[in-house]
Image (tube, rainbow, N blue to C red; front, side, top):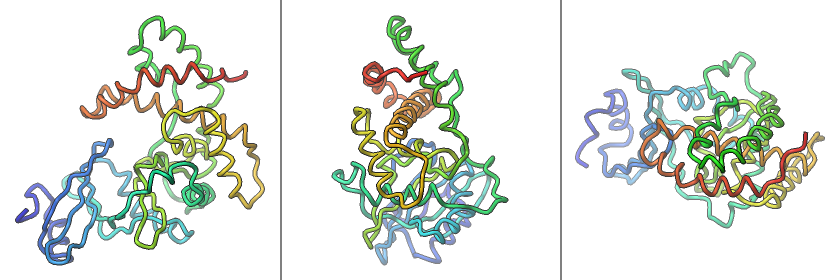
Length: 297
């Protein structure tokens, strides 16, 4: 790689050249957001940085406005080296978090749960405009894509079930605290000091803890697993709280259902890889839904 790509903004390439020197290797990182994400290694020092470019301002707003306040409250985040906006394109140069979280730590790891709990209790300046960030919601039409892709017989069985979950758990979207919005374990890493770091914040917003915790549970697992995550989260809470394990676990199941219907619902207009991933999940998702107890009420 003799030079930076010609499509990159001059302000970005100028900063990179002045700060790190000539480029060595450019690795494209796969994501599902539609943004361009790269890991860039520099020839002279082998320094690595993450470069993220996109047309949405959410990540840019998070790292330039929100992240400093969260760091001051002890939440580990990737460092922001430089941010810019050129020709309707937002770009960020971020610290490279070098290590993935090992698979054995994907099951209710206390450090991961602790970071999320700190986030859920964090506060921000009251003048922050949350309208500029992602807004989680579960409208009735959200699960229509799923229903249209299942057979008529299966769809007729699942439609009332999905609707009961949706109506019962609209409270998940009340803006009671800060949430990551997508803390699945592929969005975590560990830094050189061994701290866990959550590095994808495109869906940062307000909501209830269950929205994050349901997504954190890897895959479509049984209720006992959701309960174990709920127990782990609540065991770290040194403050009085209104949650009970059973109630939180059921909210997490509802949040997982919502996250699945939202993900599958996006695939019609998403990139090819997103469509393929979503299509492959439909049979498993249907089978899992039928194993769940219908929500009361």
